[in-house]
Length: 289
Length: 306
Image 1 (cartoon, rainbow over the protein chains, first blue to last red):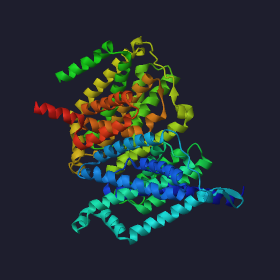
Image 2 (image 1 turned 180 degrees about the vertical axis):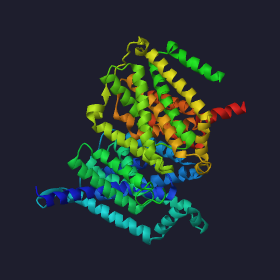
Image 3 (image 1 turned 180 degrees about the horizontal axis):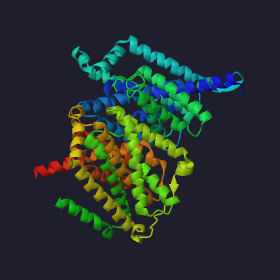
Image 4 (image 1 turned 90 degrees about the vertical axis):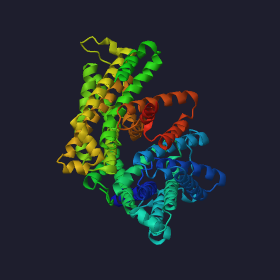
C-alpha cells in the first residue's frame, strides 16, 4: 500500500466522520449559544432522526425523502418542547434544564422503544451511493465520500444562513445580547423556539445520515450526546466555526488514533478535550472562560 | 436530631424485619445515598456542579475490587484504602478543574470522568476491560468479622458508613471551613477579596467529596461482587446529579432521600410496567415544574405549615 493512497483514504475517512460529528455538534452549540442551556436530549433527537428516517425509507422508498422528513419532524418536536416546557424555565438556574432535558431523554427513548421495538434497524445505502471507488488503487466507499461532501455543503449553508439571512442575524444578535434584541422589538422567544427546533433538526439529519453506517438502535443516543458535548466543549460553547474545527480535529484523532494506537483512541479524544480546556477553559473559539 | 436517631435506629433494625430482597434494595439505596450526599458537598454547598461524579464512585469500586481480588487485604481496609485512593486522585483532578469556573468546570470534570472510563475500558490487565472485575470476594481477614459476609451484616456496615459520613459532613458544613464554602457559593469574588485562597478550599472540598463518593463505590463493588465500566459512564454522573437535585441540594439529607426515591421508584415502576422510564421522565419534569426545592423542600414546607 503506498503512502499517498493511505493518507488520502484515511483523510477522506476522517472528513466523513467529521461530517457526522459536525451535524451533532453544531446544533448543540447553536442551542447553547442562544439559550445557555445544556441540552441533554440532543443525542436522543439524533437517534429519533435515525428511526424516523428508517420508517420514511420504508414508506416512500426514498432515502432523500427521509433526509427531509426526519429533520422536519424532529425539529417540530424540539420546538414544541421548547414552547411547552423550556420557555417557563428561563429564569431558573441551569439545574432545571438539566433535569427537564434528562426527563425528555427518558420519555423519548421509551416512546422510540414502544414505537420501533428493541431491534437495531438497518437503512440501506441508496443505490446511487452504494459501491466503492478506487482512489490511488485503494477502494473507498462512495457513501463516505458523499458524507464528507454533505458535511461541507451543510457547513457552508449554515454559515451563509447565519451571515446573510435575517433570522441568522437575529440568532447572532441574541447570542450576544438577548435583552438588547428584545428591547429593539424582536420576539426573542420565537428566536429561541426556532433555534431549538433547528438544532434538533440538524441532529436528526445527522442521525439519518449515520443510520446506513451504524444502524438505528436504542444505544446510539448515549454515545452520540457525549460526542456532541466533546465537539461543543472543544470548539467553544456557542461558536459555529469552533464546532466545525472541533469536529474535524476529533475525527482525525479518532481515525488516525484507531489506526496507529487502537487501544488509546478512545482516551485520546478525551485527552484532547482536557488539553484544550486546560489551555483555553472556554474552548478553542469560546468567549467565556 | 431525635428524629434522625429514631430513623437510624429503625434503619438499623430493618434487616431483621424485612425480606432479604428488600434488604438488598435498601443496601443499594443507602450506598447511592452516600454517593449523592458526597456530591452535595460540591453542588449544594460550593456550587461546583460536577458532571463527573461517577469518577469518584468508579475509582472506589475498582480500587476496592482490585485490592480484594489480587491481595489478601481484609474488607474494611480495602474499602478505606479505595476511598483514600479516590480522594488522592481527586486532588490532582481538582488541581486542573479548579482553573476553570462555571460551565467550564462542569465540562472539565466530565472530561476527566470520561477519560477514566476510556482507561477502564482499555486497561484490561487491571480493570478487566469491558467485562469489568467479577467475583469480588468479601475477604474477612483476621478479625473474625464474618458477619460482613451475610446480607444483613453488610447492610449494617453500609448504614454505619452512611451515618458516620453524614455526621462528618454535617460538622464540616457547620465549621468555619463550611462557612468559606458557602461564601464561595454565594460570591467567590468577595471571598477572594477577603483574603481567602478559594482555590485551595475548592480543591479540598473536591477531594473530600471524592473520598466519600469513593467510599460509596468501595462499598458497592464487594456488595454487588463486580465493578464494570457502567459505573464510570457519564450517564451515571448525570443520574447522581439528578438525585441531588430531586432530593434538594444543599441539605445533605435531601440527596439521600433523592437517591432512595430514585431507586425505589425505578424498582416499583419496573414491576408495574415495562415503560417505567416514561413515568420516570414525567416525574422528573414534574419536579422541575412544581417542586423546584426538591423532596426536602416539600417536606420542610409541610413542617412549616403544620
